Length: 314
Image (cartoon, rainbow, N blue to C red; front, side, top):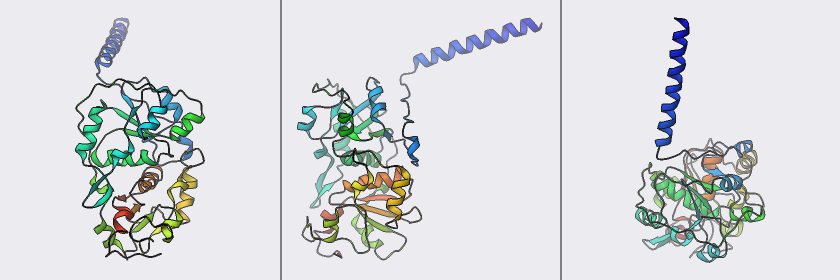
């Protein structure tokens, strides 16, 4: 009886394993592997950041779509194998007389459709300026709700420095019908009224990510120069090393703590000239350091500095 029972148990295990194999083979999508190579930097989350090695190892994964967010002429001169071009110029529009704002969701979904991107694809983004425009695109996808978007740490500059494969061949594309299926998060976009209402509120702060000359009002890129009263200045480029890789969490915490930006604050509103550099710092605070309530003032200095009724310090 015992031997017969053991035989039955063994047969059941074999059948179960075979059924599991069949189910796995029938699955229409495969899970895209995570990148654990960045774990030693102590980040709060690395879900939206991958290494150049990880990208190189996953270029042939049909569920991974690599998007080059540089200008078309830079893309044509050389890009990652299989990469699709989405020019950064298409990530900003003019609305209500304010330039550089986030485009409508239909603009983004139509572009993704033209590139053959599907809602369940893993999108990997890179640019040529230390992930400056990549964070803008990542933020845009987060606002409208794409489930899995990640950036390549170090971006194209590091890929090139490591002598990884570069091509001028453009991949053939079959258009898709892209739809945002994830959870949209409009709270990542802050309006001028919200920023104006926060002035004098010690529980919130405006983080100005522009250069020091812009902050001081000596480099004027709008009708008026200067900064929002009470805002704190930490230039975005301090977030990365000379190769464009994000600094370890301990260095980032020290950088922002020295400017009194800590996770004990309430709302943090990031800005720059047209909310590109602002998204870089948004990503660092929200993802790498795990701060809550970080959002981007999309109108940024283009809107604030061109208004006549906004307070300015210099």
